[in-house]
Image (tube, rainbow, N blue to C red):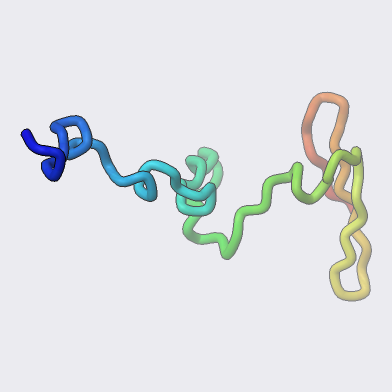
Length: 80
């Protein structure tokens, strides 16, 4: 083998760009059993992104206000 020839390990290793994929390029989580498929949704937003460390947030939808609350048992409740 000469200096210009790649070693076997280097020839078999994928390029660095193929190893590090951004989070958006990774597969989405499996759909819960009550959801037909995540592909039917425009976007999946984790509850942690909506709540951002709070126990509740208010969501304005048109002229209506809704309260999204995280319970002590970790469930979400949406009320008008």
